[in-house]
Image 1 (cartoon, helix red, strand yellow):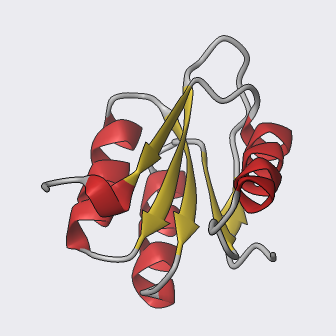
Image 2 (image 1 turned 180 degrees about the vertical axis):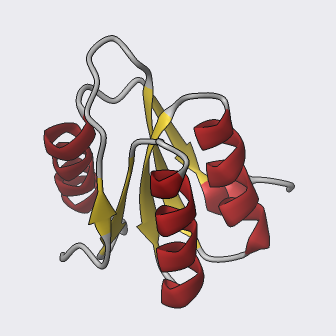
Length: 104
């Protein structure tokens, strides 16, 4: 697992979400909505690297807290690794969402 793009504004006592499997417009929109609500967002992406990088830059420029993580989320060990990376970068994770289930 590696980080494609990482930008952070780490702040205590602010909620953080890990959004898994961001691969389409719905996932990107979910991330944007969370960031606009003041939530720090760790984006795990499976596709659309350029779109994710652009979104990270936009959130960062607006003062948001964000990081992008690539890698597998296929099993519990993978998800725990992503969770640890999100926690290390942004702080305690309060919410985990699988973007592949959004809009089903």
